[in-house]
Length: 117
Ligand SMILES: [Zn+2]
Image (cartoon, rainbow, N blue to C red):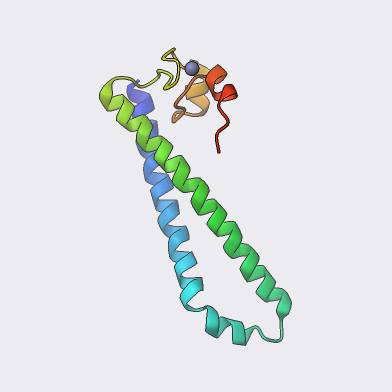
């Protein structure tokens, strides 16, 4: 239990740092874009790469935010003493599942039945 908490806190910290880094990068490409665009006038291929990278980053940001929220919820469950219990059916979450995914909010069979967005 305690070990899971340490892992989750580290994970939360790492995800937050990664998010901040990506959000910074997205902001800087946003503000500098008009100048960069003219510089890349003769290289339409590079422009496509920049746009593709931005979309990749934005997808990653969404993914990281969701994961960080999951980790935050798992930490709250530790505080409430309900960590390791399935949110949906209340059964104990498989230890192997928690090992692989410490932020898991429900057991394996519930996770298979819920269509997560
Ligand atoms: Zn369940």
